[in-house]
Length: 394
Image 1 (tube, rainbow, N blue to C red):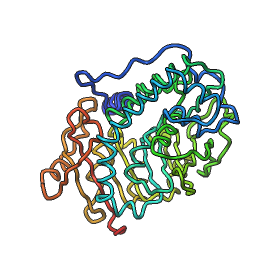
Image 2: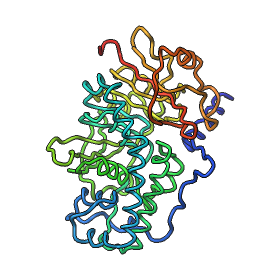
Image 3: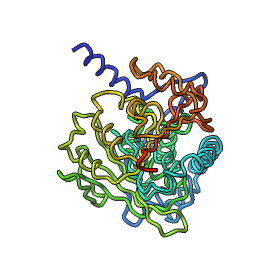
Image 4: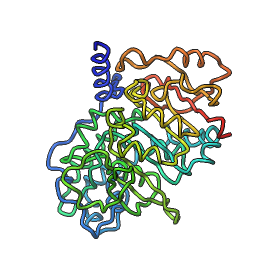
């Protein structure tokens, strides 16, 4: 009984904090106040999701109303700020990541059509940069989908409030490489940014993609994903439900998919009879990516999602918060270690430090340098990444 109470307390801390650490001088911006643009109705039918995504990504728009708002000082200040933040992100993280993945993940990238990212939340950009050739990216998290904003009746001050909230929502990811759950709870509300969909579209546009369509997903009892028009959506949806964004690289015709599913991956909800388990079990993914996952896969209460990852994946790329090292038996998996392994940060309870992984990292012959930051140790850059290849995949 005591162990269960300790686990529940630890789990609550993990889900609420998700590795929240603040170093000196590193504080997120204040959340704006005022009447947000998201408070108006869903976007008019004649305004494409792609153009709305251009607007919130700080990029030029085609639609007249949006173009006129882009002439305001408020939007221009926002666009300039986003441009600078994105340039810094490209230089410090994304460019080194792209160079690294071409060499270190060449075999996975040659084979991967679908990337599976449990506990990924709205972080589309990281798997997209690491696995740039995939046809489909499937992200799962507790966050709700929400909707894109409409600026049809908005003025510059509404735009300033919305873009201020969007900047605040992105701050943790840009500065630390992951989203913090309780910060998302504050910002991704219906009267602010309204869910993860705006963030997903922001990342798609900032990586040079055009949005072709956005559809709502619900799940039948047999696990089949059923597509619906995004609007009008039911007033309240029960998990699991999701969104599917079809996109293509600017100047190309190849259509790819980004899927986000709002769901609970603990065994109490992610059981074999549940629609979301059946969907994931039938999903033909080659590669699993796991980062900043609150060490949830270390607990027996997440055994079902851990089993699916190990059974179905040909390749697994993760930090130390993913599937514990002991599950990757040498008879079944080849492994390569990168970076440096240090004990988990103080926000997480005892019991998730891995003695066997620490011992493996003590052998220099098994470890390569990691040329970019990724994960909870953002203040020290002592990051740990493991890459596993199932031997049958060779």
